[in-house]
Image 1 (cartoon, helix red, strand yellow):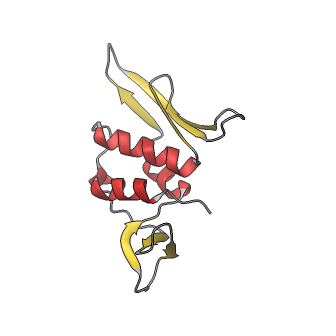
Image 2 (image 1 turned 90 degrees about the vertical axis):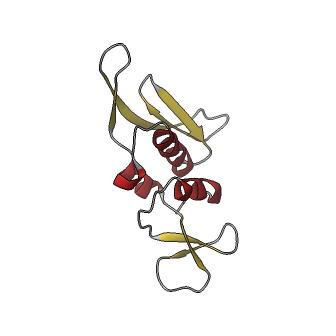
Length: 121
């Protein structure tokens, strides 16, 4: 099971995303444990793509030159480079090596731009 990388996990934590996860990073980089009592567990959630997907809005209302609704799309990138792309159709697209990280980067961008409030997740 893929989780978001430690850098994205720390960015979401710093932005105030405090939703519970099945996995958490430990004090050792790039290691995570299943939720529960563990003396090495930190409070930094290692979200899965499923967990990030529950936080991403299915559509975004954009009010630029009128009101437009943009649907969420997630798809694999070109075969040569691999990776995944998350986009709100014809508005904003972000890619990364894994689906979980591309979804996390989109959520980070949405929070930073004020389209999603971390405390409401």
